[in-house]
Length: 148
Image (cartoon, rainbow, N blue to C red; front, side):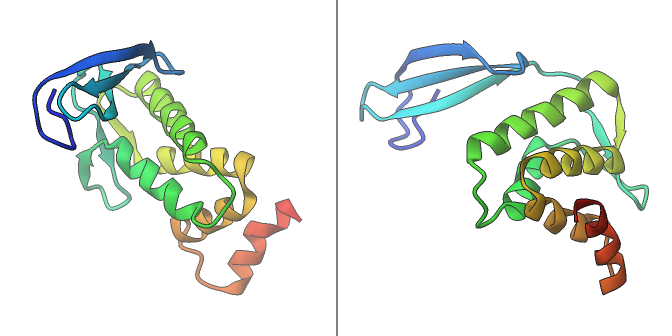
């Protein structure tokens, strides 16, 4: 593994443990050249899961997109990156155990909204307003009604 800082291919594993969902191994590494530490994840390579978008386009499943959406929804909110990574792992785990080849984007969106509603209601409303394409104040009020 090349060090992301100095690009030297000489490191040692300092710590190795399974992630909380059991689908990956987290390794803390230390570069023997610059002595900086970094984290790598080892995951099972599976047949590529595809996401079926609302317009029927298909694209490869990418957990980073889930994390990116969570980060945008939780911007300037008191939600830690660890919490968002755990949510991403939870969603990825549910998707992988439920679907083999293709997953509807609506299923992923619902999982994200369920998790955000539990963690931070403001982030939930932010995500829902974009995801559900709320167009006017009335639709926004309807989304907020159950929380009020």
